[in-house]
Each structure stands twice: as C-alpha cells, then as structure tokens.
Image 1 (tube, helix red, strand yellow):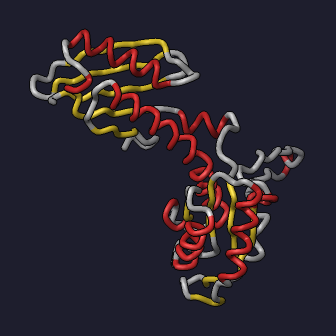
Image 2: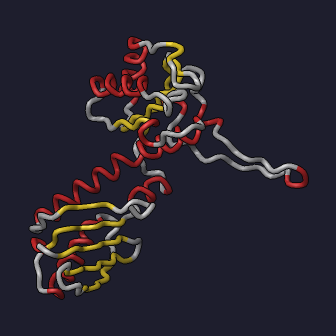
Image 3: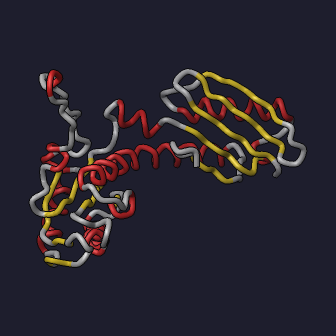
Length: 247
C-alpha cells in the first residue's frame, strides 16, 4: 500500500485526491454528495478514482477526510441532548452568556442570544470549589453528584459536559465527576472542560465543551458507519479526520 487519499465532503460535491506516495503522481475526482448518507457518495468516489488509477481500496494506506458533519450538526440544531454539570451557583452560565452591548448612539441595538446547546433543565449544580490558584476550597459531595447524574440520566441526555469553576487550573473534581458518570451512564460520552479548553473565562470554556459534547455522538456515529463501509470495501488503511485548524 503506497497510496494516500484525501476526501472532502461538501454540500453539493465530494472531492477526492489520490496520491501515489512513491512516484508523486496524483489523480482527482469529483462526485455528487449524498447528504442522506455521506458514505455513499464517498464510496462512489473511491471506486471511481480507484478505477482511474488502476488500484483497489486495499492499496490505500492513508484515508484523510475533511467533513462538515460537526459544523452542520450545530448550525442545524441536530446535535445530541447535552447534560451540563456546573459548580454550585453557576447553573445559568449558558443563559447569561456574554455579550458586548455598544454604547452611545448604538445603545438601542438588541442582540438576541442563540438558544443554548445545553438547556437550563438539563443543567445541574454540584458542591465543591477550586480557588483561583487551583487549590480546593470545598470538597465535592459524591452523594449529591450521584443524585444529579441520576436526574440527567432519567431526563434522557445523550452526552455529558462537566465544567467546574477554575477547573483549568485543577481538574481533579471534574475527573471524579467523570468517574462517577461512567458508572451511572456508561454509554454516554463525557467531555471535561479542563481537557477540551484548559483556559480561564468560565462561559467560553463551558460553551466550547458543551459544543464538543453536542457533536460527539453525531460525529462518532458518522465515523463508525464510514469506517465499517470502507472496511467492507476492502480498505485496511488508517482513517484520519481533518480538524478545522488544518491539523
């Protein structure tokens, strides 16, 4: 296997670029996208570009994939239902949010805030607190955490975000919540704010982590389906997803 295949799925067309890593020769192909199931258009393209190069999917060593599945899920409101665990006193963090209101002559401008990806009904508070240096001020209450997680489970959340005060300095409390959540809701993906975005500013860190949790089940299901179909077509190479920052 000495071939590298890049695939970018757009709303109208799916573009493919196949590279022979030994000779440097490359082939391009464009095929209609299939929004109902992107893997169908991808496989059509793989078959067509393979025929151009005279290879089979088994000859592809690296499959590099760019997709807007996560972006579309957020924009279209089709992400997972997210449960949010926050520090006591921060339950409205997604609703309060943050905005810049112009002053002076532009003071009449009203900015309608977008609907939060984690609703107030699916947000629970827990005891425990880290200070601004990352030192524990108050310990967590495991019994209270278990009760809060049981509530979220009963409400049918599909993903979980844990975003606690000053967790970017010390994620010990978040990690313990994740351990308890793994026991209570083992099939639910868990996103921790100190892992996703270890930076200060509670709202921004929470928002980013909630967005991550919202798209995880969607992207996970998409990747599993695509990988299974590629394997079924004979491709044994690695599958890598291109991030929005190009990495």
